Image (tube, rainbow, N blue to C red; front, side):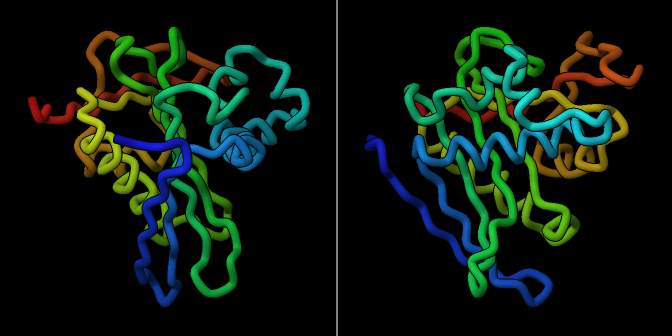
Length: 187
């Protein structure tokens, strides 16, 4: 069973950087998650400000009121030496969302700082959340992704598969789709 402040700490070394990953449910993480969602959605490319993004209900559902719902879990990565924030991955049960597949499957979002990209931080974040989902006996985790996103190969490597029939042309006329990681149930 999990309490509101359950923590899981992991230390790993990658490319001479010590990375600390903490998995928790903390309302105080909401602003960090917003900043990562903003980066992941590449909203700055369109000249949009974070405060404008927060007014969009289709984005707000991923972060607003973070930690106040059962099933809100986030993995946060920091440099184990400098303490620099590197990125976050989180999942939440949503009634609808870009990657929604089922009420029993939470939807995942992930973002890393530019300085942390291509250093294994995203892999560590996802592996920590996948482990948490397994411990919670969840049937799976879903996400939405643009086909051009370099993380598609990471998602596939970790076992996510494209959801058939989920292709959709989104912002910027880019193809996007849902992916699903099915987890073996304990029961």
